[in-house]
Length: 349
Image 1 (cartoon, rainbow, N blue to C red):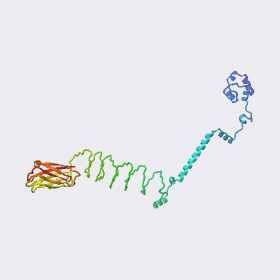
Image 2 (cartoon, one colour):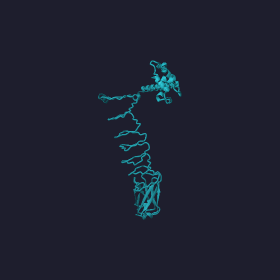
Image 3 (tube, helix red, strand yellow):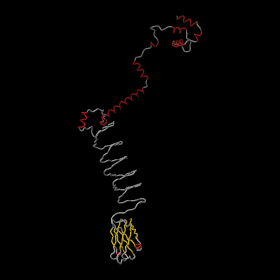
């Protein structure tokens, strides 16, 4: 049959040689025919003939390498600097892990406790006995949230790094706030001592009295039903939309020689403002009508303004002498006998 195929190739149609089939091209490529050449008859015979059983090929004749030889060839083909880098990297990882594990084991504050469920017997023992965990130089870190249904007693100070949210009442014998704090409603049943400055952006309502031993600076409007102060200083203009009521003790007053025989003097008022009433007697001469002494002496000689009340008082040629302890009202004209003279006074320092 091989011979028939051979003759068919020689004497057959020329088109079969010029245009070989795909199957024949594959066989020609497998037979090792030189690229670009035309397959010869011997080559075609070699392709037609099947391989003899037991015949060895070039691939079969090549010696097979062992596994160790293959590993050796692999290492010979690898860059030695890459192997050195990998070795150094592995050694560094081992050193870091060793140091980390050693430091954690040597520090008792970093000991982590695996959580476990407590039975009723253990809980009863904890409740009946006072249990201590660690010492004061150690730190217990609780990573999870904690809920205490009962009371919590802290015998030493409490440092809070974050915010404190209190849902109920907060009772503290004393509190020191170093930074800024925001409070919605604060009720102080006893005294409140502020050693530094106090800034209030909105209104301040005080139902009871407020005692201030230092200075009070008010940049806005100060609304108060009553203010009691030893000294008030206004750096700007003072505007009073209501009456000015003065108070204090009643000064002492004595009559001068100008009241005449049986004349009297009286006063109603205080060290700031008031009214002096003079009733002359018989034969009054010119001179001092009344002498007024302040309840509290002024620091410097005050300004004394007197106003005559009525035409008879205005007809007098009156004058005033003043000191830090009081003032006197006199006249250079002779007053009328058995006549009432009234003077209003107002004093500022």
